[in-house]
Image 1: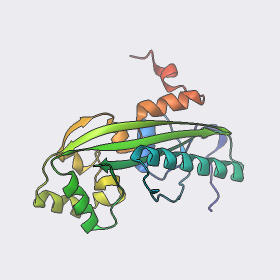
Image 2: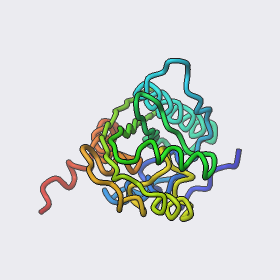
Image 3: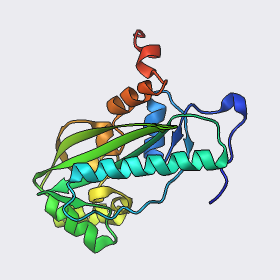
Length: 212
């Protein structure tokens, strides 16, 4: 494991993020938080008969525990550690990240012209304390033509995203309806995240709630 390099003490961010995702880092910046990213590589295999909600909650918690173990092992300063996991589910089946263009096309064809759910679990760990929350959103895609599929797959966007699309990119053009959390579909529901961080001493709303 590579040892974590921290910025100077006076510039030390207020939390750790157990993810390499630039999207999650940008969403934290949106609510005024910088972070130290500590990517965690864990087994993401779905357990037999595991429900989608149980799956994302389990993975977020596992990432948080692994991240905190790294903080402790490296003797890093105590800060809340945030982890998250996102999955797409349709007909009760979990759709992960596509392995190739063929799998991406198959996933997008399943989602074409219908609605599905995007689940993102968030976990915050600090010492022995761990708290979690779940965001569930329903997304409806337009019917996708062969040309739309070809263009989107050729863009390369589908390959690091659950369900083979990202709402913050080109796929926004074929999202017909969203019922839930836009940031949750991106990968980090900010309402749930802010509530959990407040429980661990980072009261974002308390410090900014009276600003207009």
